[in-house]
Image (cartoon, rainbow, N blue to C red; front, side, top):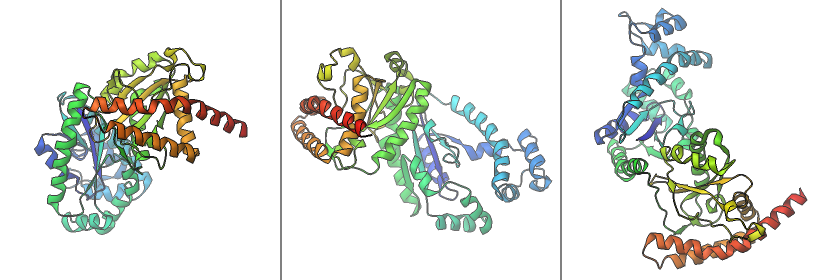
Length: 405
């Protein structure tokens, strides 16, 4: 099952996106629908709201007057906290019931207006944010929904900012233009990313990134941060630390467009225990494949035991975001080398330029191979001699840096 979180500011157009996803075959769990269910007449949720906010939030027929509740609940942070304390646990329980009832091969979309505010993004394989400018959203709320302008502004102000939403967005769906445009984007998202992503999760397949260098991308750090948050949730207490490593972690360096992450664990048994949790989170294990930045030859630096170079490699099932996830034991040479190499390349322009030239030559050599696995092997093997030398140089740089304080 693929779980995608769908969110966006009030008035951005999530309902349009959700409707199209359902038409394409998604299973929708709508937090707003659930929020209405748990406060219907006769429910404990409605009774608690009346106790907290007064009889004025009821209509004549005993049902909830939502605008009246909003006027009170969004008047202050304290009032909003009371509302959330009453509704959120009930919404959570009902959501869990619906998620558990979905088929194993479902593409399950959870429409959650406060996904960002609630810090829920890491719990999903993917997060899509529907965006429209604040003034456009305000116009829609006032003209199309009949909401008083002051209330609309208060609702918008109480929600996450555009910057906060961008930080968690794997997919950014701009809904500022014509309605047909957003529908086309949703259909492309479905066919090009969601369908293969779900299949890859179910079949435990990681996507490959061709050994083709691209210019440095500003969004690599943000993408790594989102992956790290998901990995941390999946790993629980087994992860000692999780770091963005490799070429995508070095500003200004060309790289294969696949984010490299290192998970540090206490022992190799912990690495093996993470195989299933990571696969379920969208990071299946890869057997017999070398990490993008290979280890030095055995014996480099005196570490002659192959066992201390052991690691477990996982990839990403998301066709829109290839990744290499190396799990290494804390203090073992491969684990420390990944961090020292990254920091050395960040700090030393000459080493960085030298490595860039090595990578370019390796990519050129791989370009002559038509078979992707062979091309990837050529790319890695071409860089291996440089890593043997870099191991000693990076360690010497690190030791000198430590001496300097």
